[in-house]
Image 1 (tube, helix red, strand yellow):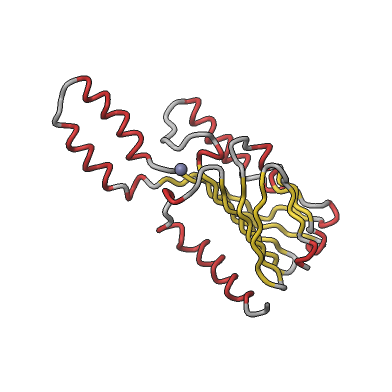
Image 2 (tube, protein in one colour):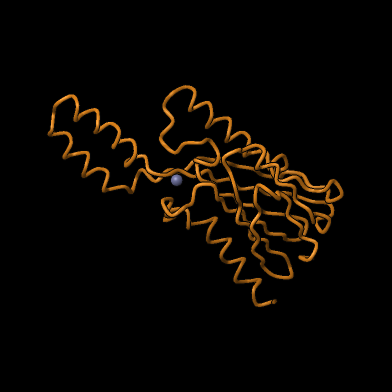
Length: 204
Ligand SMILES: [Zn+2]
């Protein structure tokens, strides 16, 4: 059991530092996000990745005022972790740091660019229209929202029940794959919309 602790911590650290650069967003499953929760002394660090489809209902680049408004509102909501992952009052947790952003895979979609060039030469209006659709689907690809949180808790061992109001905030989200790390090791959970509560009493 103790052997698991350093391994899990290394994974979490690597994910925060560099793994985002090479993350394959097209490997994600719509409806399913990932949440890491690490208890360390008085602090709880959390990291969330969720498909754009789950959070705002689309993964194309927001260009209309309405879509941009949805993204801005989602980022603002994601920056309030205790409204999404409610902890017992007895834990006495407050937010030290919270950040949220939208990530896209546009930059490394070379296939989309090749198609783009072929279609440019076709010329007629109808082909241009088809091209617009493909342009959207291929170059924009998938997006994910990414958030990181740091909480400070007076009694972190009381943070044993997490209420996932996240699913109320984001109606398209169906499941979070949760990894929890405490002094006793790392444990994986799946928290679903039907049963949006995580019981961590065995983790302390
Ligand atoms: Zn996607």
